[in-house]
Length: 77
Image 1 (cartoon, rainbow, N blue to C red):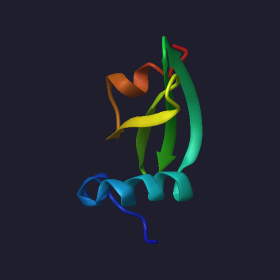
Image 2 (image 1 turned 90 degrees about the horizontal axis):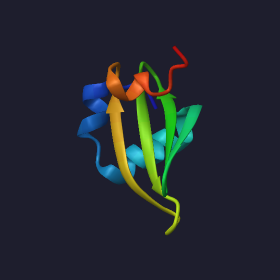
Image 3 (image 1 turned 180 degrees about the vertical axis):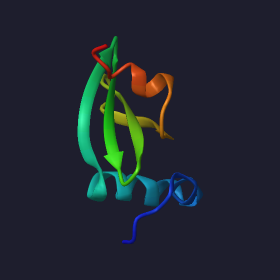
Image 4 (image 1 turned 60 degrees about the vertical axis):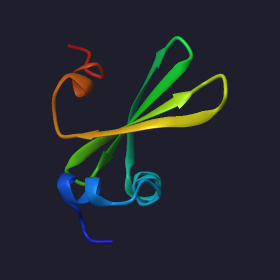
């Protein structure tokens, strides 16, 4: 698949977004909060955070972005 912009990625169906993240995305980091696990992937020139419910072992959300507060929580600064 050709590289997509963040805007083009957001236009994809959810299932296509998941497929792209898990096939083209590069694992960056993981963060744990209570019963949730957040996994950060770099996809082309943007990031996608996948939120997992640890108790039920399910993906519950995807957030895509280029910069900002979500990315900052993965920084050691």
